[in-house]
Image (cartoon, rainbow, N blue to C red; front, side, top):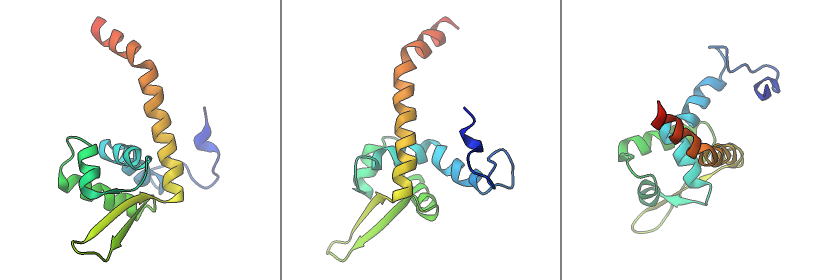
Length: 121
């Protein structure tokens, strides 16, 4: 385990580490779902909102802005009529999204055990 120690100068367990805010943006409910949805390729805002059922327009907009500020998502405005905006993963975003997708896959793999534990609790 210990992979969090592989980057000297960063310590996610320290409240002063800049990784904390990005980790919060990535692991929050909407951040992780947004990254996973974009792992399949660029999407327009409306398509992304439909893909992530239950997210409000406001929360998706805030999530995209935070992930864009972190350099994980890019926003491309197309000079068309009507206006078109695409959201896509950047190279660092692809790396983080791959980890999120792997986490989702790991969750799927143990979900029968989780559901069994929950039903017997």
